Amino acid sequence: TLILGIETSCDETAAAVIGRDAAGRARILSNVVRSQVDEHAAYGGVVPELAARAHVEAIDAIVAAALGEAGIAPRDLSAITATIGPGLVGGLLVGASTGKAMALGLGRPFVGVNHLEGHALTPRLTDAVDYPFLLLLVSGGHTQILLVEGLGRYHRWGTTIDDALGEAFDKAAKLLSLPHPGGPNVERAAEGGDPRRFPLPRPLKGEARLDFSFSGLKTALRQAASAAAPLSERDVSDLCASFQAAAVDVLADRVGRACRRFREAFPDLAEPVIAVAGGVAANRSIRASLEAEAARAGMRLIAPPLSLCTDNGAMIAYAGLERLEAGMTDPLDVAVRSRWPLDAAAAPLVGSGK
Ligand code: ATP
Ligand code: MG
Ligand code: FE
Image (cartoon, rainbow, N blue to C red; front, side, top):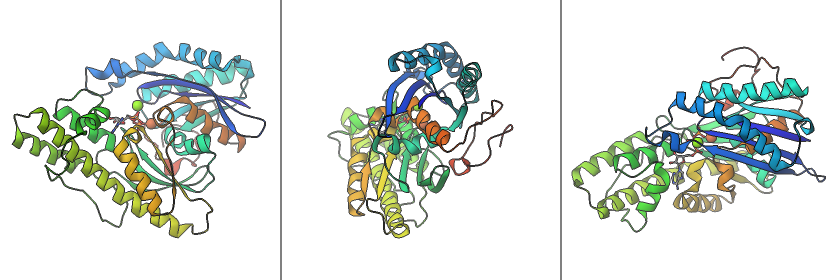
């Protein structure tokens, strides 16, 4: 089985080929990503119209590169998969139309994949993790704790009620005049800073429901920054350290609670797993604190390589592979959707909108 996966839901044009080896293990044969960060940097965020055009310009070459690196011809493919939501409709249309056209031309099935399902199943691609497992998805657009019970069986245990964590890092960077993208720059500036100098709030810490909130933290950071202005390099470093400490603290509290709930729900698993996905997983303080929380709950933390944590085609191809193997293919008139919660990923996909 050889599957092509296409991802164009946000600001990455990506395509990958995966297959299964003789032992039945999933293997990545190619994974090509073209990021549009440079196109959007000047605007401090992703501009949908620019993104859609950049996808149109890049998609053919990216797909050709993915096939070329895998060393296969289009007719070798067993199926074509593409992200059909959630995301920016212009970009989704580019990837989905490309995938559908290939499926039609080659006479192969098309599988439309939920982008979040791609993130959710990545630990099965990288580490052959068994169902059920717990997933923390922390990216620029999402902050969620999900129970992954099986293919198409996802339960959202918690989500942000305002900003995503990556978004909060990006906004923190912006208000401290650090360059885009914010996450890595805030992390770097925080090194050597005093995390206790600015006492920032820990929104929703200790709450029984597993939700997150980061907009109050961002507001408190803005107030602390303007009270300390003009900011020296030391001030910025201490502000970043204090911000990161608050984020780590809240995340650890929520994840620790989720791990304990998971252990209660599934007491008999041989190796209980919590996996992390999304670009924020690159943060070393966050990784270290997740390791500690998982260990405390007697769980194994799986953090895939960063290239598979951020948006990529391999995760889409893999989700498509599981769907194909379960007989879940889609008609060529399946619609793209800008909003599509993962809890509803098992719902019928035919027709337009929700
Ligand atoms: P989504 O996948 O939800 O649509 P996205 O494409 O913006 O959102 P990713 O590409 O997975 O998300 O990750 C990008 C986000 O990760 C950005 O918000 C970025 O600031 C954040 N990030 C990257 N590295 C770090 C880091 N070292 N520390 C904190 N945040 C980081
Ligand atoms: Mg991205
Ligand atoms: Fe993503």
